Length: 230
Image 1: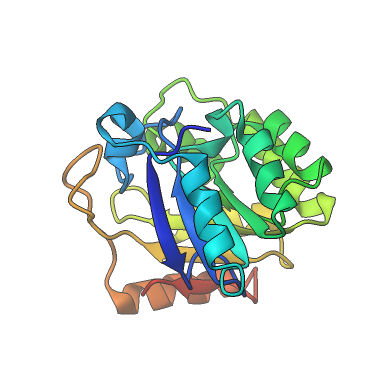
Image 2 (image 1 turned 120 degrees about the horizontal axis):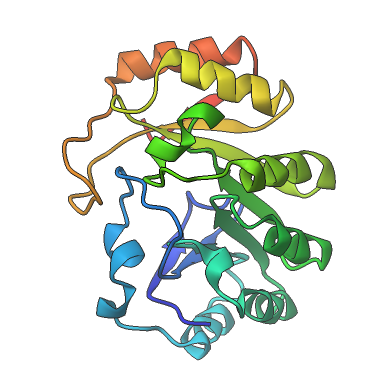
């Protein structure tokens, strides 16, 4: 699998795991607030990392690292993602995959074949505001709905998360998302932070106190909802 970035240690990206993170390139969405714009728009400008380098680190730190996060970009675009995930599982590490949920067929294949232990799915906005939020005026939300329904019923560890921007998200939008997900789900709000490498400019986040108010509103529907990275 083509890997365009490799973070050798993370204590944040994989719940309960000491992990490393690999980054894939390319994405089918164009979210203006994407903080990995380079990976999305021009992955070829990044040097590649071989699978063998990842496996060598796992062997070297086999008593420390017990998980691998696969993120992007959009990992489900990688045709050999299942093969790479299988190699990781053969080495005895847990696998977490981040996805935007627009590839339900690939997601189901991964989960049903035991190739992932945890899925983190980004919920970009309430359904009626998806097209503008993902930069795709013709966007069809049906695949996203299918992925949400699958994760809620398939039994795999998972979470849903929304990066919140003042430009795109209101309290009402987040409440609509919460109602869609349901009371028992793991749902995280992440305040937008400017990485300096965005698809579009002029994006801003909320203040910490505003984020606290937003998550309080969401908690009325999903009691376990929480903030991340604030």
